[in-house]
Image (cartoon, rainbow, N blue to C red; front, side, top):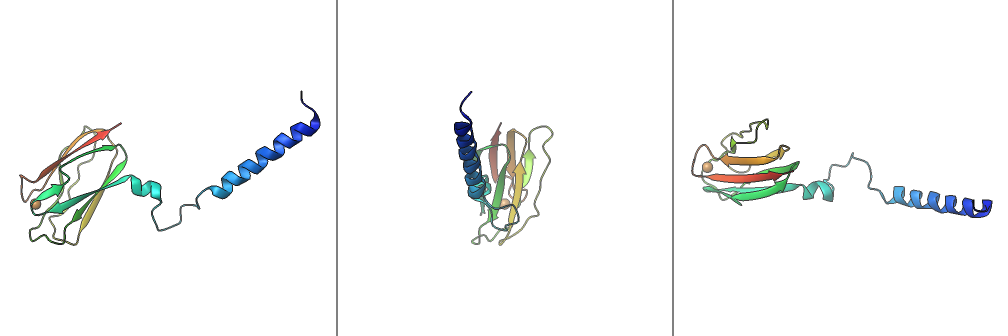
Length: 130
Ligand SMILES: [Cu+2]
């Protein structure tokens, strides 16, 4: 066993360190702005005439995909989950023109194929990893 003095010193240092950790932590979740961590978990896909960009994505499960309609579009488009892993919910935006965006969080790992029901050659694939 150490002397009582050194034990107290170690405890004081530990307490100071934990106070620093608390001081350095981000403020609680009431902020309207996205934290950098949340922003990193969102991937943006452009919805254009007549293609998605990129056409292929590989993301970790839990990533949000945000489809953003290009202001240059003259055609309406939508986002339809034509294929998805078993148990993953189907999603379908309305056919829309810009300005519009549609966001889905992909929780189930596996392969998703998205197409535009207005232009069936307009497709993209998303692989969600574990
Ligand atoms: Cu389309």
